[in-house]
Length: 217
Length: 173
Length: 196
Image (cartoon, rainbow over all chains, first blue to last red; front, side):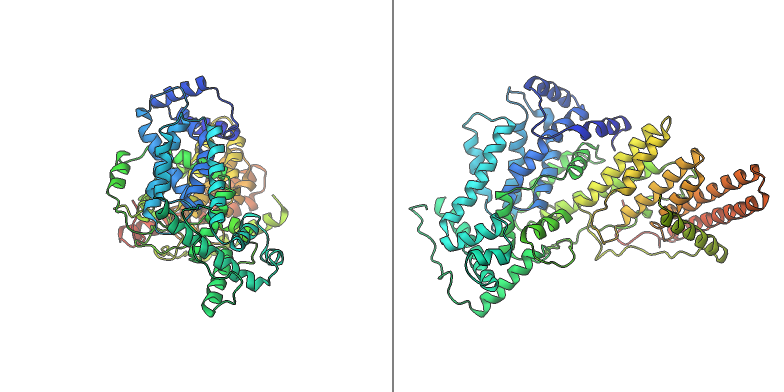
């Protein structure tokens, strides 16, 4: 239960806080982390509010492929951060890289439990985490840009591996968000034929994704 | 293209479809318009869209998630980790689709759809469902006040249910 | 508050008073265990928001009653998840919120607004529960205050009518609460699946 004092502070704080755009220099963040580690939930909440939208949008949503799964993962990430904040050691690069790592591990767990083919599988994300251990952690904004670019690159790479006509169907209907009728017109087929084309395109993509991991393992 | 992985053999994209393909294409079209319908290709389609153009997180929902994470829990928080460690690696991850996701899906795919319904995916354990909260209160309410404490109790009880439902979806026992 | 809504409220209260004369016999239903909305992040988000807003009202009600009412009005105006589906927890929260708003209006002497809030709250608690009982009680207290106001204004006939409505509402509140207690003790009040 939130104490009345915390709840009131929440109302004021949450109303005005943006996400990555909130300017907070590293020292202010360090102080907030110190307070959070001492049990100050207001400070910890401020940090979560700042990072959450980026974690959701750039890290979890693309990898899990579902808004519901991403929300669950975000809730689980928060639970772990709250539980383990006392173990975090400040290393001069902010809290975000650590929180992002927690989120990726939650995503790995969730991906391992599912059987449905999506763009990422658990091993993709695990490999990504391993590679990142070798490089300097990036701040939130840069990290988010990299994550979003990686997601788009993954989509593009997958489309390059399937028949160009299938890739075009997916591009026009899903990525460009054209209506079914407009997509059919662009691909010079009837809407009913476009339905078949899109079905074949997604089947081809699923087959490729299911087999691609094995090829590159 | 990856030179080590020649393209997977595909049928001619414009070949006449079989009856089965026509049926599957129709199913896909319906599933794109209605997220409550189970369909692997539709799920992949949504995953592609979300990777390419991720949607922002609803601010109200986000505030609630943060508040929920910070609320003191009656049980030991470390139970979360212990429970997850026991989770088997079988089962299908079940994701409940929010009304926002339904609206987003309808917007993206621009199909006339039936009234949005919450997506129901096959589950091995029935989830705890919404129900009246009367059972949480053993005595009549005082004439004045007490509402805030009652809502605290309701939220606390249902937070516990939500965790149970989430564990059940992840096949945590 | 628009006129049509006020008329609806008046009709509801009138029907309630009339219904009270015949005896208020709300049914005791239990939410189905199967087929209802699952407790999910959307429901939880709403409940968390409700909790936070009530705490905000806690802080304001001592010296800023209009501010407390405004906060609670945000909750009653907020969009509920799972549109088109009844979520019992949210109905109970709204019933209690309207009861609290009514009490705050009472504190400020805004009896008409208190009545409207009670009427709105009762639409969220149609079945025998402590939530309904509490709303009826607040409604009775409101009518009692109205009776006193009318008496002071030298309108004894109307005052007597308001007093009669107050007594009936309070009587109905007692009946509802007694029924809940009785059925609770009999073990029938606990929904299948139980509550923790």
